[in-house]
Image (cartoon, rainbow, N blue to C red; front, side, top):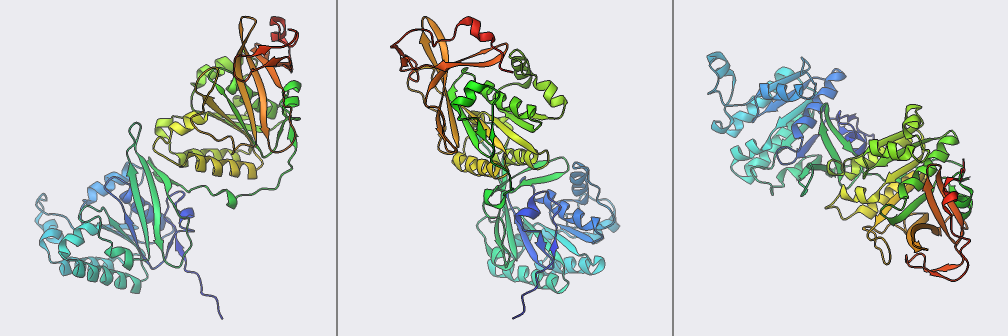
Length: 503
């Protein structure tokens, strides 16, 4: 039995969308692009025609709602110029036009019979002979049809006509006349739905979903996208199982012998580490310690900061001997401040992938998951997002360090999101009081990839960086924040030990 030949694909020109569609739109087929006004249908349609024009294919934009000037202005706002390879045919009211000759060449869609409107579209098609067609929008045709049966027949007529001409057609539907009418869904070859969400705070979020694509596997589910100068950018949903790279699972030291002892030698390449603790305990400092160690090994690192202004972070890190600006200037460190109110989960995952795929970052820090959670206040799938992202990073051989701030300072504390079971290692930071001073302790409570110390060590942060003391084996209750002293005082760090240099 001969295999069925695969149809050629017409690329959409939208970054990320062709990956979702497994290559683009099947040539010679009719597709539906639906969504409420403002979701980006026209921008995607123009990109589709521009992509065809770039390879010499003639395009035709048939508009029943916008004028040619509006379309050209919209394209210009993205830096695009509609040239001779794209023709615009407008069916708009002639009342505002003074030129009688122009009035005769235009059609007022709401005053015409549907058959005449369809005939005018076919005549323009025969004149232009385009390879790609956009029809904007179906709401006007639905209103002219004045009935589901007649509407379906007209859509079928359009489909069969364009199929005979081997044209790839994109029908736009703004869902303003009847959002529940699914007549076109059963007729067209594929359906792409655009949505716009308005969170309680922050900018709007946009996402798309391929509802149907006959005879073609595609990436299912919702995919975030944005509209920016230049057009639409889609962020395909990350599927970790599709990504795997061969690498050596070596143990990477942190540069501090006591911390490495706690971790059983260090962090394994291709693993994730969660640094957990209340505000101010030094979670970012621990994360930066692994970054500095990676750069000293000659590797590249990427840091994504949600909670702290970069200028303040640079200044604070410099006081403890970590010059982030110098590392960035040398090209070994990518550090980026993210605005949780303006960022979707899909875009964030895309930015992380860019640093790992393109810049070959081997250590990735996300500081913190509290800020990452804030980027999706109405999302219920934070743990799923994090699972896919961590699995992807692990499979690429990147070592990931995450921080989470817990509520409270001492006693029982809770994290806003529990991802301890996702991380391969968990480092727990705590405040405790002893001898009239507030002190800080660190312990490793989990490590999947090997043994680790089960002790608790005091640590301090000074102008020399991070310093750890001996195990606090003569205290009980350190993790609760209110320890009981059961021995002598020698295990505690003295002020002079703050300046121990571990470099």
